[in-house]
Every structure is written in structure tokens, then in C-alpha cells.
Image (tube, rainbow, N blue to C red; front, side):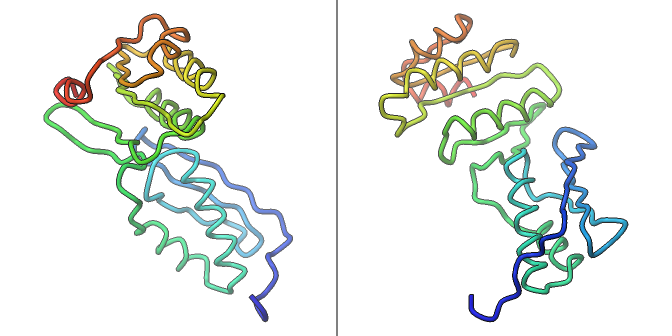
Amino acid sequence: PEGAAPLPRESWRAQLEVTTPLTPRLRVEHPEEAAGTVVDLPGLGRGVAESALGALRLAAALQMPLREAAARLSAAELEPGRLTVRRGNGFLLLDDSYNANPASMEQALEVLRSAPGPRTAILGEMRELATEANAHHEALGRATRGLERVLFCGPSGAAVRAGNDQVELVPEPELVARLA
């Protein structure tokens, strides 16, 4: 916007610290504070961390004190279904059902792998991939290798199984809900 300060050109760096798999913090090194700023992230995964760093840089450009921006960021509420943790009776569910795509699935599986086992992935179709759908679903299957259990529901089941022959194909979404 007209009259806004330009983005700082100084170097900003961030380190994602995971004290436990489900309590991520971001340590941001920036020119304003020699000690850096620690942000308790409002969500899980590398994508949230990258977005948080961008938001903090924007806050600095808008001349908001970084400690205030970090506090606001920590209290932010994310869209439901974006790597949301749900706690059940003896289990944790990582809900990343908002809008699956290859990058979000990679990040969700990365978080799942960092969680204590046994780990089960319950996956559905990634849509809007056009001619690349089979290749991306096969890569998704490969990315699930080593998990204790993988369920998939959707038209690309054969492609997912081509990447991991241990994937269990579930024909109906209602059955997935019961299994979950």
C-alpha cells in the first residue's frame, strides 16, 4: 500500500522447535532483537511455520512490535481441518481434511511420522490434479510406507496401492468413518 514501509531487507531465519510432536514453536532470528523471538505456533507442520515467519515479517514492515505480533499469532485460530489435533479416548487424530493436495499431504504425513505409534493414515482423494492425478497418488502411496496402517478411499486407490501395496482400500466413506 502507498506509504507503507518496505519489507526489511535484513536476514530473517527461523528454526522449528518441536518439544513434543504436537507442540511446535518457532524461534525467529531477526535484526530487531538479538535474542530472537519465540512463537508458540497455533498449528502443526512446516506450512504453518513458513506462514508464521511471513506474517512476522509483514508485521515488522507494518511497524508492529514483534512481541505483540508473536502473541497474536500464538492465539490465532486456524481453519478447521488444517492439521487440527483431536483427542479421543486413548488416541489422537490429526485432521488434515480441509483440502488435500500433494504438498499438504506430505506435510501431514511428516507430522504423523513424528507422533508416537502406532500410526494409522486414513486418506482420501486429492482432487483437481488433472492428468497428474495418478502420479501424485502413487507418490502419496510411497510416502505412507512404514506406517503401521494406511486406509484409502477414493477413485485413485489403485494408484495409491501402486506406491504402497500395504494400503487397504476402503470402498465407502461411511466405512472409513466407522474405522476411524
